[in-house]
Amino acid sequence: MAEAVNERRHLLFERRPSPVLVEHRPLYKITQLLLVLQISSRGGKSTLPRLHLFNWALKRSDRIQKLVEATRSNVLNMTAWGFDPALAIAIRFAVAEDLVKPTSTGYQLSDKGKAFITEVLREPDAFANERKLLIQVGKGITEAMVDKVARGWESA
Image 1: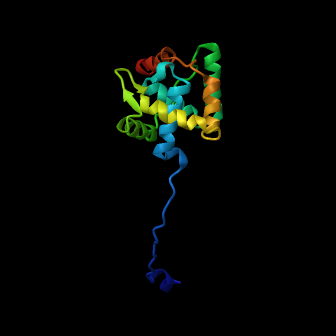
Image 2: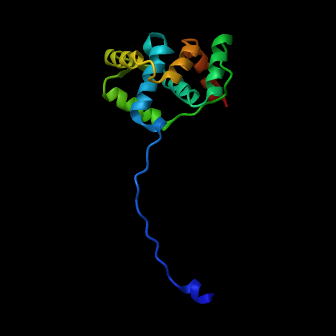
């Protein structure tokens, strides 16, 4: 037994390609971003915390249902939500491709972004789940509701 422990063995590792999860692919995130700006934002504009809220909510149906409830009650009953680096990267790419434009308070859908998302919306199966959920929420999650929650972060 002692001889087996002292014997050196070599392991060979073979690098294999690993797929990127769909929700981490930049084009997927960019399209989600444009859908939020088109379907659930007034004037095609939104602040960064609000965009992160929608991104976080779209990951699970129970989260998006909280947004639907908040739309009905006009009160956002959440204490916090996640900030996703993949969304930050998607926003940078979207700005670089002139799909969204930075504003003094956040981001706004550009003419090129409107044309892109119009093409996506022509295909009924493209992002069907996200579209359905965002239509349920509508434009009812206001910047004021998000700001009220965010002010709570500062005082904590």
